[in-house]
Structure formats: structure tokens, C-alpha cells
Image (cartoon, rainbow over all chains, first blue to last red; front, side):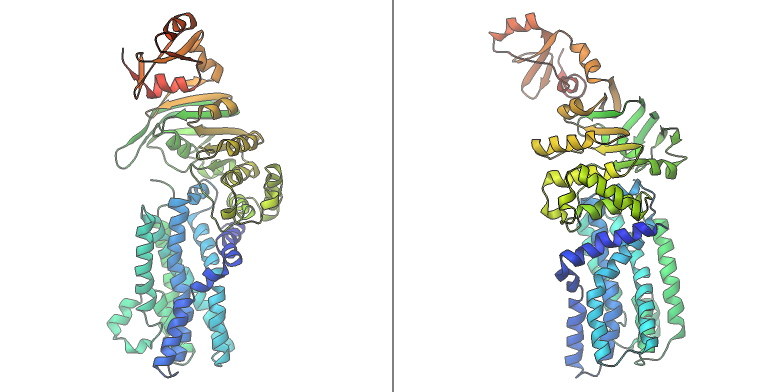
Amino acid sequence: MKVSFILEMARFEGLSWVRRSPETAIGYAATPLALLFLIYVLSGGKLIEYAIVGGFVAQIGTSAIMTAGSIGTFRIILKLQDLLIATKISKVDYVLGLALANMIFCAPGLAIYAAIALYLGLFTVTNVLITVVVIGLVLMAMMPISFFVGSIFRRTNGIWTTASVLAVALTMLPPSYYPYTLLPKPLLYALMISPVTPGAMILQGYYGISPINNYAFAVLAIEAVLYFVLAGKFTPWGDK
Amino acid sequence: MIEIKNLSKRYSDGTKALEHVSLKLKKRVTCILGRNGAGKTTLTRIMSTQLKPSSGTVVINGLDIRDDVDEVRGRLSSIPQEVDPWDIASPEEHIMMYLTARGIGRHEAKRYAEESMKELGLWEVRDKAMGDLSGGMKRKCFVAMALASQAEVIFLDEPTTGLDPISRIEVWAALRKIKGTIVITTHYMEEAKELSDEVVLIDKGRPVMQGSVEELLRKFKGKVRVEGPAGRYRIGGMHISYLTTAAAKRLVDKGYTIKQVSLEDLFIIHGGGLIEG
């Protein structure tokens, strides 16, 4: 693993954007914040915890999936991926660099959520730790999906469209903004394919707004590893 | 030295890009010339380990690109055709990202990046977003990457395509500062003449000529290019012949134009013109 490269890639793709165009970084928080407002108004403030918990995982999930657009741009339009193929880095280094960039990119939006959670008194030491771990695992599990989508299309319009559809399917359909207990078991199991589902289940459990599900952590951890392995195996990198 | 051994490449759609190419590139700067689609980029991509050959191999400074790919990658730097910068990142961020990808530690990378940016006149704009820089400056950033890479062998695929004449001259000056073996693909004759110790002309996936500019033009010795209503080669509506000066002068009154022979004429006889007779 090339740690120096991962850090520089994060600076290249994430920090540069936040530094020179901070408004776009905030942009990724716009939808979750709008949902936060909607849920607050429609539920009369009763479901605000779900909006906060959902915002953490949905924001990181959406941002990770939409990174497919950057991956496609680097590969097809800018040819920067070609530049990197003939170096010592692997696909995994590349994805980890982009994941870290994504984390930087999401930091302003996540900070807004953290501030609201703090204001509402939702945070405990355990909650904070669990939130950080879940955000990290959701990011790790979503990035390989994004890498795969960003690598298989010949044109960027296919990537953007697929990423947009997946962003809805993998972050809005799962129980990120509503109690996971509302879902019938078969549907819940089907939605487990999205890392956002176990992520939201864990957070809802630890924030005390739904029952704790002991299997969700295992599912999320397995997905983070499995999706990386699958993407490593099936995503093209350089050769055609 | 780069030794290309019986190299062929057929793409999945059936296109034959290279056919049984065997070459030895021994000079410091080699220019690979050819028309669009001649196979230059495919050859460069294979040599720089971005693309796998269908058959054959390339040996770079004793290392086989098939067997020693990691080792080869540590020794080469390849700047692909039409690579464009990430508009929001700076020249320094581009160079640092690339150098660390090549396995250079951050501390050393910072030093090499600084040296190369100073060498190429990028130091003043090191922290500016690439989107705010001119086309020439952007291209120089990629040359700075190659310069800073400390690689033994550098591949540059059409490094000046789309640049204005001044920017092109700036990039040429930058390229002259690179040490080590350089392989440049281009379809600009002037570029090949300016930069190369040796030229390889490729047509339809095969090398057709190899040598210095002087050697390649020797076959035209004592001849000039004559353009007019009739001739041996035809490009569009123009006919071209290669005649002795005395023979050419006799045609001037009949509406023919006489020009000095250049590398462009190799294209006409090997890669471009339709032979009429």
C-alpha cells in the first residue's frame, strides 16, 4: 500500500476542491439538509433523530457513489488514470486515495450534521465513536462500487446516469431516514446489499431510536472487505 | 536501450494496431512518426506497460515488460496522449501526486517537484489552479512531471498536440532539459527534426523507416519536391514528384512549384500519398 500516494491523491482530488471551490463541497450536503428540514417539518420535530442519523450515512454514501463521475472523468476525459497505470500504484491505492479525498470532501457537510447532533444532545462518547467507524466502513464499502461504475463505461454520460440512479437506490431506499423496523424482513434483507442499510441500522440502534441489531456490524464489515475484493478482481485497470 | 521483439496488438474489436514490430531504440531521443491511427500510441502504451501486447514483448534496459512489470514501471515515466490536468488542482499537487505514485517518498518528491517547477518556469504558479493557466503552462506541467520523475526512460505521446507555436517552442525547450532516454510520438515533422537523434516512421502498424533525420532524407539527395497538375504521388487534388533541381526548373513555367524536401515527404511516400505509377 502506497500511503504517500494515498495522502497526495486525497490532497489532489479532495483538499484542492475544498480549498479552491468550497461551495461545491457544501453542495453534497444540500440534499440531506433539505431532507432534514422536510422530516423536521412533516414530523413536527419527532423524527429529527432519524434525519440526523440518516444524514451521516446517506451523505457519505451519496458522495462515494458520485465519485464514479470523477473516476470516469479522470479515465476518459483527462486520461489521468492512464498516467497512473504505468506507475507502481495498484487499483486499491487509487481507490483508497479517492476514498480519503471523499472524506475530506464530505467533511464540511458532516460537520454541519455533527453540530446539529451536538446541539440536540444526541452525542455520547460511544455514539461519536460508532458514527466515525460506521462512516468509515460505509465509505470503504461504497467506494469499490463507485470505482466499478466509473471504470466500465466507455462514455462519461453512462457513468453519471448510473451513479445518479445508484445514489438513490443505495442511499435513499435503504432505511437511512426512517426506522428500519418498518421494513418487512425480506425487503430489509434485500436492501442489505447497500452498505447504507447496515450502517443506518447500527446508528439507529446506538442512538436509541430503533432496536440494536447485532448482525448489522458484521454485514457492514463483510461488505467493506467483499466489495473491495470484488472490485479488485472485476474492475478493469489499464488493459483493453 | 529499448528492444521491441515481434510485437503485435489486436484489439478486442478485431482492429490490428501493430503487426510483428521489431525495433531497437538505442539513441537518447527517438521520435516515432506516423499518421493518425498508424499505431504510435498503441506502441507507446505497450512499451510503457499501460497495454498488454497480443504477442511479442519489449525489453527496456534489460527488463521484460511482461515478466518484470513492477520493476519496469519503477524505471519509466509515461505521459499519455491528450492528458489534461484536473482544473481545480495546482501544478504542485499534480506533480506530487504523480511522483508519490511512482514510489518516491513525499520529502524527496517535494524536492524534485520544486526543482522541476523552477527549471520549467512553473514555480511562480505552483499553487494556482490549473484551470487558470494557459495551455502551454498546463502542458509544461506534464513535462515537469516527467522531468521530476527521475525515470531512466520517458515516453511522451504527442506532447505538443493542440499547442500554439510559442507554447510548442516552450515545451521543446523543457523537453531538452530531461535527462535519460526519451521516446516521443508525434505527427509534427518540425518537432521530430528539432528534438530527435533518431526517427522511426510507422505506417499501418509497421515500422517503415528508422534512422536520423539526415539518414532518412538521404534518399532524396539532390532532389526537390515538385507540386503541380501531375506527379507520382497524389494528396487530395495536389500531385507531387521528387525530381532533380535541373528537371524541376524545366517545369516552373508550366505552373509547377518547387519546394525543399523535408521529413513531411517521408509521410507522402510511405504513409500518405497514393502512388499513381
